[in-house]
Length: 39
Image 1 (cartoon, rainbow, N blue to C red):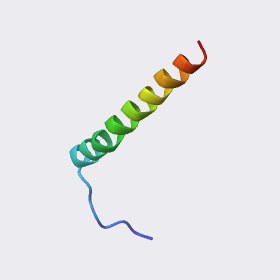
Image 2 (image 1 turned 135 degrees about the vertical axis):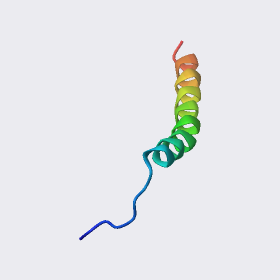
Image 3 (image 1 turned 90 degrees about the horizontal axis):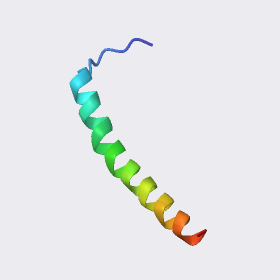
């Protein structure tokens, strides 16, 4: 299978930031709250 659609690297970076930042923030919040439970 040949990939014809050319995705710009910049668009890819922007997309991953858009997805990754809230995801990382959510994981961080969960870890902080979980660590508070184990104290």
